[in-house]
Image (cartoon, rainbow, N blue to C red; front, side):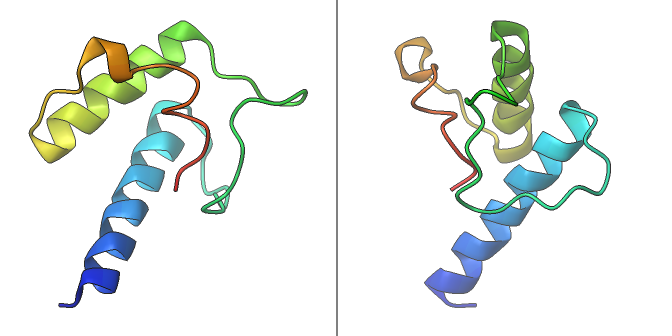
Length: 76
């Protein structure tokens, strides 16, 4: 599997976590879909849920200072 294939697989796993945790169903999530705008805005509980889910899924810890709007700007 090439690097591009690996990145695509990781991106798809992250999107699956987002759909599951935010209860979005089968909604298509574009790589550049913005999560902070007038119609959709993640709150701190949503971010915490996503951070812990990503940490569990991929087996690493995200430093607290890295968590914020910029880290969750989009799925990409």
